[in-house]
Length: 539
Image (cartoon, rainbow, N blue to C red; front, top):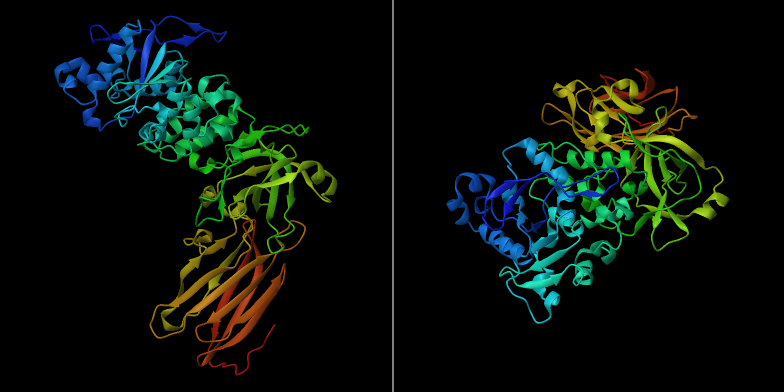
């Protein structure tokens, strides 16, 4: 750990502060002050290389002002050393950067005092913390400053002219109002590890970082976990963070995030893509409902959990929809527990995805146990990311539609538009129901290569995909400007229908087949030349 000697202005190497096996601080490092701030543009900050090779250039940069203020204040407080992240880390060394980020929370926690420099607060009003500039400071919206707020035991706030606002204890109520964090966690009266996973995630919901990966890395200390740093992985860093939390904690509130920010996707995985998804989860806490379930775990298939699940009866058109009971509740509700809406993906492999069209549901647990006629559980199931099934081979697909043949007139037809697009596997030419037994209509627009011919709209609906029932489906083919022809088939059957088209007729057939272990409905649309049908049959 490098520290700035506040008297000489030089960097010195010291042993990093640490805890021993009894969780007690080992005083190998001299007492030091630590700076919390928001970064200027990169070229304006003083770097490790500036201190080492170009001290004059470093002192001419705008970022040197806060370093000078910190050193002067430290000496007044009887401290010889200061740590500042801009210049005490050699960021050209990936190994050193990784160690520093994984140690950051401990370094702030073990400091003698933390100075908060609010560069965008230019004055101190008579009312102190009620100053609008203080409340609107950018410092409250940055990802890294969350742990910098919560970790230190002693903290002092200063304006851009280094005029004091007060201590963290004195400003705790105001900071709580600004951040939404209980003041007991701010002052250290409560250990942040006593807060639920959902609560701690909600503290970061309105914070931003410059790099996408830092959304995860800035929370390592908040959850007391360590993961390798892989810049360039994007949002996967936040997924890895949650997976590591699951390995360490049995708190199921990690699944209790809101899906209201998700658009254009009906199904997602069990894990959130951003802390922003926990914005409404600040009042969710774990609860013990008296049942011994296996804790969640991370597997190659997805998140493995054990919990009761049951069918959502109100959604009769969607037999794949379920609710899964979670061991958590809203803090102000002593009687209800949360149920997660999920959709079946593969019955045989117990795979589910989260359904984004329904919200987290609160149920009265005691009444549920009495009134549920056919609860299933607790059962072991997997909550998976739908996108992961893009690479799953066909032997693991549950159901789907295959368009095997289309009319060859007008240069032949092809699928031009497919909705929902995420169900269409273009290279293999089929619609997969991997999104959990998708039972809303699936559409394909069939377009000829040559101009002047009718297009067709193919409408497909899958029904009854329960394990004990054979699947069935409804197929509707609508030629442009013509009436619709409809087919309904049930498992093991083959149905066909003829309909008029130009000077010929079309024969549409649908047959259920087992293709590489998957139940697929195979659709053939064939042209019968010279067999013009004058009257359409109805089924």
